[in-house]
Length: 86
Length: 540
Picture (cartoon, chains in turn blue, green):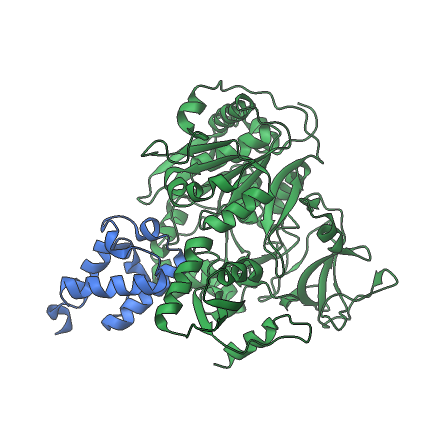
């Protein structure tokens, strides 16, 4: 998955859960919780939706990597990379 | 001082003795860094805040609200308010502008303590609608001075200018101390008034149910703005002279285990939603941490399933002990103390001094009263859970709503609105709610508040909010919506309505799902039958 594809996936899921948020306007390194006003149930929903769409099981222990937009995108790029898929 | 004051019991009496240098509160940040306040420091900080309220002209009994995350300023403001003889009302930072506005107005707020991000996101949008509010004190990096207008003052400078000594005035056990809002099914939220004498129940219940004592390390994960966040997040551990751990961040399984390990937590009070999230993270993660300091794990907010109790035993080394209480009861009423035999799935038994009963219900599903008396149900029979009034932390009023308050007491009982049964051993088992309240992640959400905001949208003719079963949150708020003529269901409109709700209500209250439905079920008198909607979605 390219960086753009991953960003599209995360932005799409955020937009579904919090359609009021200006996802393009957020600070990619800011905490999603603060940037968008997500609570923990929202966050879990976003992770589940993205995981499903990316065909990736995202275990709870990896959640700390997902708390920023940029972190989430990098995680997906690494997690779906060719080396892992092979 | 004369009389009873929660802040004296929780802070000053310890600060005046050999415990002055004991950590009262440890605030843990995302990286695991700790900011500790000793009892002596907490006494001085809260003195400054009490002096600041005096400087601002706040009088006894006036309402001082907080809208902050779990930050040091929350403890300072709540306890400082109590010292000053004013009434403290913490709100949840997950509330959007509409719940905040409504509560500030209903609670006659004169001062609001908040943080810079919440000022920008939430408070600035409602300030003009709260004429009683004289001062907004803002903590943190207050960029763009001028946001919020002339009522806004930066708090750290204002506190620094105040002396750190203060003599608590004469407050009695019956003087109002705390306001906690409770959601309504058919009306707006009501403000339950609690008194300074409630601290006796906060302390005694923590000693009885958790075995909490001086020097213990205690962690309550509840958010401010819900009653647990105050009764056990702030007051009880301090009243017991424990060290209270406050996690300043949101749930994260690994970090939570790290906090338990690093802070050597002895007593942990959390929620079924949190336990279910930890269960999802797996036993292996739990086993990577040294949790041997944990002596008691307890839970509150919604019924705790037996598998959660057993999981605690297996993964954390201790069973999770359910407790039952409400905003109106102020403190734990029914629980599973370490000394008692645990029946997984049960709420437990009433604490010493508490009389609880299950009352036989009438056709309306509430306790049936004939000739001013109610009859107890037989063992095993379902009925409404009721308590004998008179415990110290019982609410003393719904502010400005005497009729609603009186309606809670019938035939010598306080009626809880919960349906339960009691077994032959005296253990209580939760069955359900007698009304349409939604319980999401352990917090009540009132359908009325949600429906009122949705029906204000131009496309919506009628709306009904119910709880949809959810494996983690227990229930999530779902709204059934009938559209006005000229509007038709679409994904775009669904997103628009979700956005509309979140912008106004905030994540904790707003509906997470919208279902378009042009045939909402009504009674003959025109009320929506939410029960049918719950059944309708269960069958989907």
